[in-house]
Picture 1 (cartoon, rainbow, N blue to C red):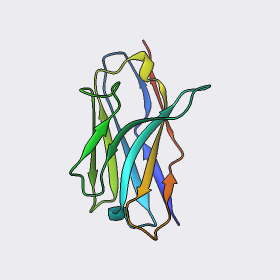
Picture 2: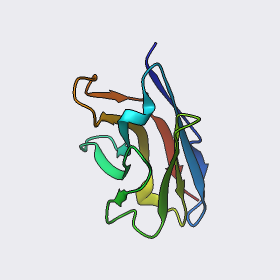
Picture 3: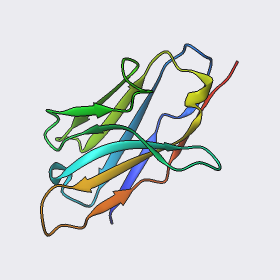
Length: 120
């Protein structure tokens, strides 16, 4: 069964840190770029960070640059995002997303989301 299972969300104070993790099941993880998106109520889901299928290239939203770091372990089929210096505006539901980079595979998968709340 194909699943993306996020973990690591929670409540943290401004300036604090969290690490989100996402475990992939049921598909060839090595053939997918991985992303973290986030969404707040009433707003569109936005891309926060992306890592290519090999882990050799990353991209970040301007809001995440210098504070967040995305990484992956293709042996464990996991992707993580270390979030430092968190701000109240980082409060959102964070989603793990897999995007196929090989033709012929299912195009993409979404996780169920994990809540991150930054508040004092």
